[in-house]
Image (tube, rainbow, N blue to C red; front, side, top):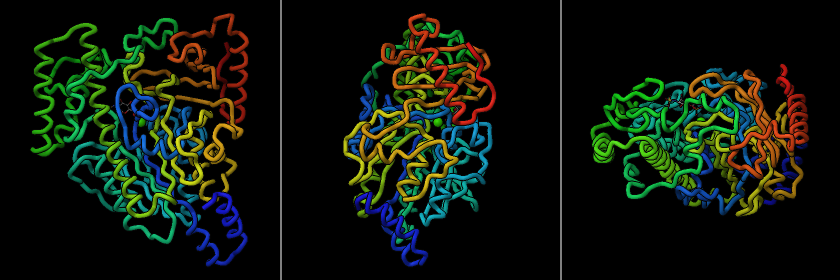
Length: 514
Ligand code: SGN
Ligand code: CA
């Protein structure tokens, strides 16, 4: 149905108090299927120009939908990104600043609003917000980070131990719920995978994928962090020094500690049944033997670690992509594709060796960026690329708007519907606010900042250090121009912009001054 007709219909239905009229209009509302992963960077999606893998099913979605080239999270870490999506608010306003915080499920969220408006709502997979989900008719989640192999899931009533691989099982559970739902009401389903999160444990079927090739290295794999703030050098997320042999790199039994003196066993291996374990050992055994025999050193060792890390990460993505294909096929088979908006995204980006790193958290592009692809038949233009600066806080408002509901004023984000309908012609914001708070694993100091189309200003709030990047001249963010006199004016403008965003979102406390 035409979006306009749909909006008119829903406006009409709210005027008519009769239950029958409301039910009629509700049945016309589009379904929303939110496919979400954990730590999937755009550098590993071929529709985004990946140099390192192919994702045919995500690409299919992209061909049939709109690709957002500049979608960013407001805080590049798991639970905070999820809370921002649910509430449409920045972290300071939804109360979830870091992974240690607990989500207050009593607050306003978009699933709650949709549920109240007659949508059937469900959430399957990774949740990570500590308190039980609210606003869902059905939920079945992985406890905490969850496991890849033979995962446990829980509902409010029970725990279930499943045999199989998490990405397949999450999809099975999502499709089961779709089978069982009431077909007379629209649905909003959030299908949230654990993959490709650390420890990047691939499924049996993809354990040897990429064995016969070398994955290209990023240009900045051997970054020495010169030209930027000293804080970068103190990071604890290097491929060279901060991956553990057994835990991350699957070299079983290695007692060689990482740079922080840590050795840990991979937690997935002990969860496997004999068959899974045999496939695992058959895949890693010979490769590990060769590695131990070759005993690479220096840069060669870093290169070897990069290959092992990136291949496992991409193997997990191969399974994600396969399962997205299963979902798209299901929608086709059931005649649901036309009236279902399918969204693909991930909670934040990830370093795939850029700056020598894995993990996320920093406001630099690779971790701040999120994939966002939206297929909305008949409305979003197929194959369109949108470059407007959108954020995870815009997801909730968009879903509410699509459902014909009003976006609550207290939400910071705004509906992207106009961007979907008109592309970059639609008026849009010109800057976005970012704030990372956690002081924990990987030693990334708290920082906040602003990004515009061309520039990025970062303030390390406790260390009182500033960085400014010209993304047009320096897309890899290798040169801090904060003190460069040629950028004095830009610097002042960007600081003004940061102050104005802080005022708009009522961020408390001073950010410090230059
Ligand atoms: C775990 C990982 C970290 C990762 C955080 C946050 N360590 O703690 O490497 O940064 O999750 O990730 S692990 O040894 O437990 O794998 S997040 O996506 O959940 O925010
Ligand atoms: Ca994550």
